[in-house]
Amino acid sequence: MATTLILSSDDALSRLRQSIHAKSGNFYAMYSSILGGIVTDPALMVLPLDDHMVHRGHSVFDTATLTHGMLYQLDPHLDRFLRSAELARIPLPFPRERLRQIILETAAASGHVEGSVRYWLSAGPGGYGLGPGECIGSSFYVIVFKQEAYPESYYTEGLKVVTSHVPIKPPLFARIKSTNYLPNVLVVLEAKDRSADNGVFIDQRGMVAESSNMNVAFVSKERVFRHPPFDAILSGITIQRVLQFAERLVKEGELKEIRIADIPVSEGHQAAEMMLIGSSIKVAPVVQWDGQAIGDGKPGPITKKLLEMWNEDARSAIDQLVAVPYPD
Image (cartoon, rainbow, N blue to C red; front, side, top):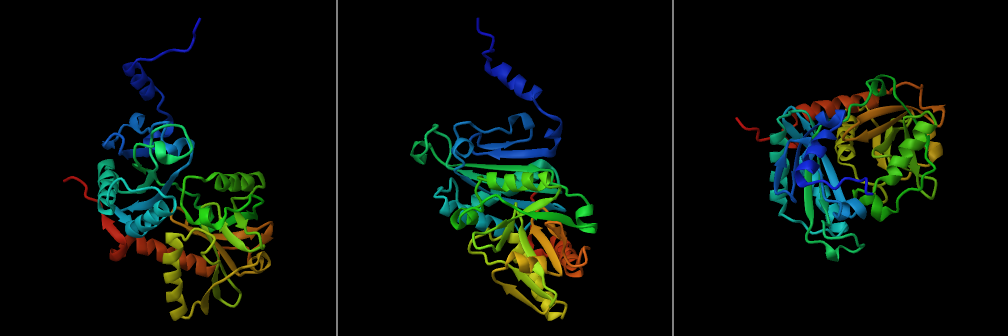
């Protein structure tokens, strides 16, 4: 006798609503090109299993920060999103301006002025094969959710990181912001297993690459801001902005220069300051790497200054902020 229920459409929808978990309150609004609109009921924030994003990972994504009712650096993030889509050979379902409009309107529908806005472009639904030729067309999704909050201790006391044993992605895949984040997840799990906060990818030559989903930068004892080249890692939007802040610090005499070049692990260990940089973590000091103190083992002055500059930029940089069209 069969014991697994066969549900009607009404029963299935009821079950979806019953299955909503305690954290669903962090999900504010979702756009789905499959539905052709925006929903605010977390029970409906779903996508089809035959979407190639689900079973093949053939999709790309990006994220913009929602702050004070404005989207910070939306256009640079969207530009990178489109570059990733081109490299992943996923056609756009709409022109760029329509994608941008959907992102802004989904943020508005959320009714929230603080959060994260993440969007995906997928090869789309159509079957469970490998090639996207079976897909009926690419799909686009947007979700507005509560921004990840890192512990305040990350900024006041600093983070501990370890050198990861997880193999780094090949350069092509590292430069595409795709949904294949299994290596990145494994880096974090490995770090937690070793009583650290995060890990650092090292390339095949023994050079510093990047962290789980953040860029890694240093300040040398000679006050040189150091960062690895971007040819084999993701070119973070936040690090590009932070490099502009660092240029200001060079002009003000707080830094001697900026150097984008290979960084051996041994050189990184000897730095005066080390930091993780990304749109969610912003600029966070690293005070210990592989059990060895970085500098004096405390958050450094340049890292603190760059974080202050980022916070001020996200509040008031008119050229970096796009107003969300909330209903009156």
